Length: 190
Length: 418
Image (cartoon, rainbow over all chains, first blue to last red; front, top):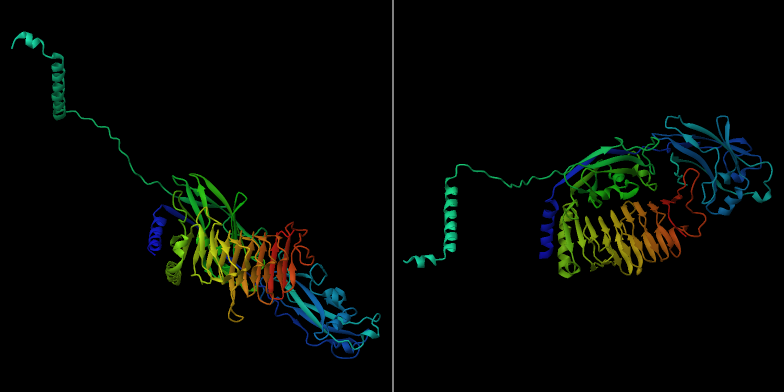
């Protein structure tokens, strides 16, 4: 312990008994902005465009039926530009294979104003999967100064290609807005 | 006295003797009576030289190339020139300190400091407060051009949004002859294996605990040999360093050695089972982990969901073949695993993906890992895995892979797999 004490007492003295000078470059502030789209919303009810029932109850849609939902992408208090996209997925927690089968026929159309950004199968709007690069026009830039963006989302069963094997299949359609920072390697939290 | 007798006297000697006597007399007279005096001084002035360094800068502020905002992955750069205006050559330490702002930002900031394309330091800014990077020589009248690049790792999460940190960078210069540890933040203690065993070990731990309670830091310099610290909970705010030239020869036997707020440099860890159980703010640099471990480094169990471990840097180290080199099974943020070599073992990095884990994995060599470089809840990155692969893009030749797995954020860049 004597050795320890000596080195403890001895070292600081030798440490500071030399000439030294410090030069500082001060006051570099690194400030991070905000990216927050949580104020965005999806309409509470699907509107019937074609067909009978009042919800997106897929078990009660027949080929040719269409349902419409309004969605608003809001930048909230964000002060950063960001890139966004819309993803969609059929879900059935009890029977994932049923959801998968519905995705073979359920179509979706996404419009912004007069522009149709996407029209095709729901499964092609899935979140990113490893090794599969999908790109569509629902992905776009949102500048910090832009107003909120409205989208019309139509889910429909085509007139053709939906045979009896699809009867009574049930699933939930999950729609999400995703946003990411504007840097080259940024990814969505998918 | 007859002439004959006188004639035979030793006149020569007498004359010389007289002359000597005369000259002595004369010289005495001169000394005593001289009117004119003259003096030539051979004086020596001991004047202290100056030791002075100054800073020049290429731009006032840190900024990104295209004026981008400060976001994870965006490098903010600034050039600084350190000039030696002293009368002597100096050496200097790189320093950084938090001036103000949020810890959550400051603790995650990474800085890369280059001089003439060679990297002097690449790691967390907060670690530079330990003054562990010394530039050994800056000649009289010479300058070093340093390029600073500050960024938040790509794996940083949303919790840093709308937060900020103000950082002061600095340089502490001293005479070249000054000791090895001139800029350390606190006392420097040197140990031999016999100083850290039995009763002495306990006494030292108590002393270190006391220093740590006062939020002071210390540096322990370990001489060559084996230190058995198995099962201990090490005191905090201590940098454990191998003595100069003895890197890799200082062995710490680690058996569930619990550490937090500590740095290790040039240490070799040996043991079986689990080696080090880590809490927050741990740094390993140029360390070696023996092949006997089942798990070399593992996160400590935390109480409840809200507790988070923050800050783990493993850099320039070698894992010789632990079955799992690094096991991150708790919520842990600001993890930097860079420039390490993993030899043997099943997996290099295993990460729980149901926890908010943020890990940056850059420049590692995984070629000798037997199974997978990274494993997280069934998602695997490594040799032969096609789905999760680092790829170059049209914009950048650097191979990268960013992953968001359930709750975990991983970013991989420039690692070698095969």
